[in-house]
Every structure is written in structure tokens, then in C-alpha cells.
Amino acid sequence: MTALLPKEHGAWAQMALPLITVTAVAGPSFISLAVLAGFLAHEPALVLRGARGPRARRAHGQRAAWWLATLLTAGLGTGALGLARLGADARWTVLLPAVPALAIGVELWRQRPKSALSEVAAAAAVPLAAVPAALSAGAPAGSGYAVALPFLGMFVVATLAVRGVTRASHATAPSGVSSMSRGPVVGLAVAAALALFAAVDRGVVPPAAALAALPGLAVSVAVVLVSPHPRHLRRVGWLLAGASVATTVVLVTTG
Image 1 (cartoon, helix red, strand yellow):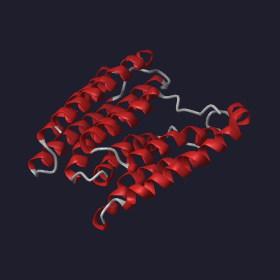
Image 2: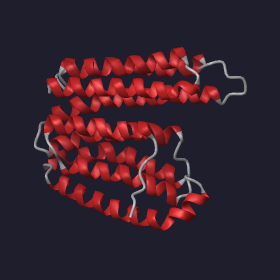
Image 3: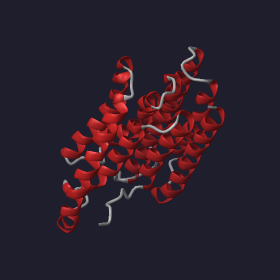
Image 4: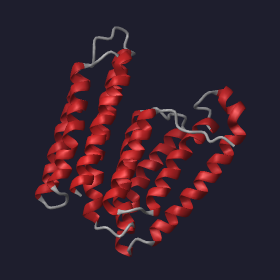
């Protein structure tokens, strides 16, 4: 039985790179497997809710239901095993990815899988899972934060930057991203960089964690300032993916 896999290439990068990084830095964990199962469950859930269209639901509804049940069972099982490996004082960290994951589910139920809330929550969920994943693997919390915070800042800012470009393309008379869209994205990128360096100053993360996020933040700011035509968004996606890979390399080699 062929699996129903997510179609968005950017979503794969947002899932894979933080999990690869935290696994390389802290070791494998059941939490990471639970996150992978949850990610894969999203596509059959989209099909069942009709977000891929009524034709896809009619053609693949039964298969989607089977895969959704299987993946949710796997996710809950591996999540429970990962939770059992966390100390009592660290179990709250599972709420870090659980809250945005819940927001994704709510938006999907409301049939708004492409809303700003859903996309920002998706950008935050997997990076934040690095914290309980690291702890579940027996590594210190700092290892998880060193992975979570750079990817969190990069992915959220990149998501808003790309949404600004696509929203401008749908305007009645598109003339690039408006200043009202540029301001929040640039401000958030600066705030993310400052927050990372503040975390370095407080000893929460090593200096490499702040430096690793800078290429991705810079690319996102460039995207919203230059405002490329939507036909160039594939290239933008590759630039953002390249910056994310660079983040992984920096964190793994210095972790």
C-alpha cells in the first residue's frame, strides 16, 4: 500500500534538518520518531479533510484513513516511550512542540491548512521538538536549545517572508511586498538575532548557535526586501534550504 507523502519540498526541509541536527548532536530518541510520524500523518489528514480536493478524497480516502490511524498510533507509541525517558522536571518540554502541533490540527479541522497561524506553527513545531528530543536522548537541555532556537528563528522569519511575497502576487496591482509587510519581517529577523545573542550571553546556547542562524535570517530579509516574482520562489526555496543546511553543518561540527 503506497504511502501518502507531503508534497511540499519546503516542509520536508523544515522537518528533516532540525531532526538530523538534534540526532547528530544529542543522539537518537523516541521523541524524534514521534515527530516524524506526526509530520507524515499530516498528508493523509489533509486528504481526509478534503484539503487536497474532493477528487483526492474520493480516490484515496480509505488509504488516507489507514495511514492516518497507523501513523497516529506510531506517533503516540513512540511519544510515550520518549516521555518515559524524560525526568519528571523535564516532561513539560513536550508542550513546546505540542502547542504549535495542536494549532496545526485546529486549523486543519477548520479547513485552513494554509493560514498564517498554521504555517507559522508548522515552522515552530519541529525545531521546538529538539528540546525534549535532546533530553530524552540523555543530553543536556542546552543541546536541545542550541538546535531549537536557531531553526525556530530562521523558519518563522522565512515563512513570513515567503508569505509576504506570495500575498503581494495576489494583490490587484502587485508591486512587490509592501512596507507594511517588510517591517514586521525585518523587525522579527532582528529580534530573533538579538534574542539568540542574548541567549549566548546568558549561557543558554553556545555562540555557534547564534552565528548558525544568521545566513537564514539574512536570506529571509533579502527575500522580503527584494520581493522576487513568485515564479522565482523555487530558487528562493533552494536558497533558504541551503542556509538551513549550513545551519545544520555549523551546529553539528561545533556541537
